[in-house]
Every structure is written in structure tokens, then in C-alpha cells.
Image (cartoon, rainbow, N blue to C red; front, side, top):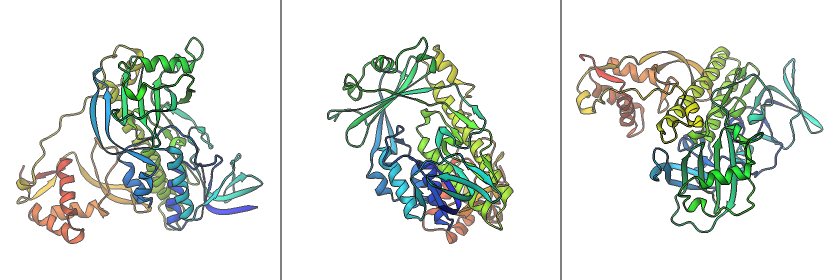
Length: 462
């Protein structure tokens, strides 16, 4: 049997399920192929606060996500010193990834996605798109979306963006840990450790090391894991209950980027497009971002009046900007640590991270409201490709050299219109009054704070 759709998504993780749901919500016929049964065991349970707007844009209920996770309000961090520093985390979550991925897949199914439980065999381009053999039949699609993670169904030339890294990981049941932090992050002499309590009471620990610590001339995974774990001195309650014989897994955690991530009939997303350093703890967020962006790209490519060139440029630029941002951020985080700065693991990962630049003084609203304002250089408003709702279009956007991406929309309004009102009004106060007419209560004040927090405005007579 052959199933004809607009888009075939291969891979049902956060990137693939998110993209499929977004496409189905705008009326596209979508099939998603996933070989492994859900829920499935998956490492990478930490979710940064940035996931919430993305899940909200996909229509995933927040309470459903929270039901498969444990809120993280505080982490114990041993980074710059051996002492544990309590660090607040606002809106973070540790989830059962098996349950979270299953929840997202069911959300996609409810949105109208046809979920096919089968292995996608070697796909082939046809005169009208793609033919994807699955089980005894096949799926024919105009566009193929590769969300198969590091396996990368579509292949492609892979460029490493940081030194190779392996993750040793283990999961074990723990006793009650009332005094333990929800999450522990700890620098080690030859790597670093992340550990957290999972929903249901288990503990997950992951230790990130250079590949030469294993294999020929290196340690066996279980022995190395326990030795490194014991070097986190003091171990603390989260690490104290590791039972003898706990199996230790190994997986690749290296950062890379596929050279070509989008063509007129194929899009790579999630780790099939690029992978970031796990130190950011934003792997799920990044996967969701690519899923949402890829959906808008594909929808534009398939629309008769869509700007295909803009769609291709947008997605390729977004991936490159994300790679640059995460590489720079990880480099700065590694550079913040100096206890083991002479060790090879840390020295290689510091990269060429530059210190954060000094910033100008934030001007308070009371000082600017009675005055005429303009954008502060080097910020500028110029035409760029942007995601506007579910489409990619050419719009005026705010750009600045130190930003990874231009900003085209604020609170759903074109930023160009907001800036036009700034320039047209006799003073900032009257410009904000015009914003108030177009926005829900309180939103104009939030936009003004955003402009001021990002040091984008100055008086004309400055």
C-alpha cells in the first residue's frame, strides 16, 4: 500500500514530532515514521526554561508536560570552585524522556499526523518528491524531513564544531534524598558531570569525557565511570547510592553541523542537522526550535505563492546562527572554569571564547519618555528573511552585529511598524501610546522594557 502525503517526517523525537504537529496544524498532510516503540528510554532529561514558548506555539499543554517531569528550582553547581553553589533555575524541568517523547508523538497524532510504526528504509527521490519504503508499503511525499538524530538518514558531510566528546551514563534507583539538590553539575579534572533526580525517584548521572579515555589504552566504561564519580569529592547524596553492577552506557556527545541542511525537497532537523555541546542543557529546546522553523520552511516551500528562496535562506541561516551561538556559549562556560585549566580536556574546549563585551548604561524610561528617540548604533532596521507565523517572508527586522538572529516580530507585531512609530512620534511616550492601541494590556510596557534592556534606544539629541 502506498500513502501519499505532502511531507514525510522520519524520526519521532522532539524535533520530528514538533515539526509534524506544526505542519498538520496548518493543513499539511503529514506522515511520521518511527521505528522504536514509545515510550522509550532516552538520555537527556534536562529541559531548559526556553522550551515553554516553543511547546506553547505547538499547542502542547503545559500541565501535560509537567505531569511527566519534576520542576527544577535549584541546582548544586561545583564549577569555578570545589564548593557547591546553590544556583536558582527559573522554569527548568527534569523529565522522563520516554514519557515526554511519547506525549509529543501523541500530540502530533491528535493534530492529524499519520504515525507509521516501521523502519524507514533507503529513500529515493522521484519526479515528484520522495518514495520512502516502510514495511510492506511506501510513503510518497513532496518533501522529506530527516529527524533521525545522529544516525542522519539523509547523510551529508559532517563538520566537527568542537573537540570530540563521549558521554558515560547510568541510571539507578535511589533512596529518599530530601536534602539533595534536584540537579548537580560538577567539574572534574578530565571532564564534567551532570546528575539529577528523575520522576519516579531514579537518579541519572552523565559524565562527559574525551574519547581517548576509553578503548585502546583507556578504561572500560564501568570502571572509568566509577572512578570519575568518586573524584567528585565530596560525592554528595545524589551520587552516594550507586549500586554495584549498575550498567554504564556510552554515547557520542560531540558537536557538529551537516554542511547542507535544506534543499527544495528535503530538510534536516534536530541532530540530523547539527548537535550542540551538552553543557548548554538545551538539547530539547534546540530540537524544538529546528522543528518549528523547519515546519515554516516546508510550508513556505509547498505554498504556490511562497517565497522559496527566502525559505531556504532562512533555515540555512538559522542553523548556522544556532551553531555559532552554542559554540560561543559553550566556549565561555568552559573558560569560566580555571581549577583544571591546565588539563587537556578543559584547554581544548575553552576555544577562542572572548570575554563578554562591556555594555552601555541602560537608560530608564522616565529619562526617555518625554524625548524623541532613535535606534542606537550599531542596531539597524533592514529587510531580512523572517518567520512570520507559519510562513517565511521578507520583512524589515532589527539587526545588530552581536545578535545571532534578527528580530522581526515582537508580541506578534512587525518590529518595523513599532520602530516606525518611534520615529514618527514627537516623543517616546506618545509612541508607546500608539503601541497600547494595538496590544493587550501591559504588553506595550513589556516591549518598551525589551528595547531598553537591549540598549536599543537613545535620545535624538544624544
